[in-house]
Image 1 (tube, rainbow, N blue to C red):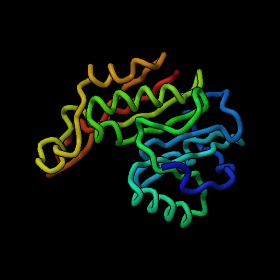
Image 2: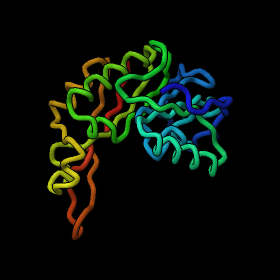
Image 3: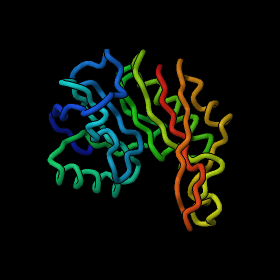
Length: 195
């Protein structure tokens, strides 16, 4: 575990719309992407406002995911700190992150590990900082597939809310997906929290 790659934190391009970042986010504020997998959510310029930038740390427990993220960042001319670590053990000081992204991770962990990961995200998030989560609902259409249902856990509204108790403000919405022969169904919880 530990640091896989460390480079100077770049300033990212300005956002072309509203920002999810709180006004107090300092230049080069810390932004872990917990369980980044093969993509890096924080690299989206929609998460950066004006001259402020974020010092991004992408984490994942999979060395293959870290390698793919490194290659993708290089192809895009971007840099981030990349670390191999699980989402429930983030190697970052308490209250040091302005923004934490956790997309498609909690549903892959299962309820007990997801609760530890959420508590860990709350630990590293600075007061007034925000976290963004996306995770499968208990009505996710993928749960009807035996292979997919073995890999993801769907959360009820009550279960999703229980995971978010460490935060002072929680906004929960759903994401509808078109699948199969044009059918639509609830797929993910989209949750924005403030500490």
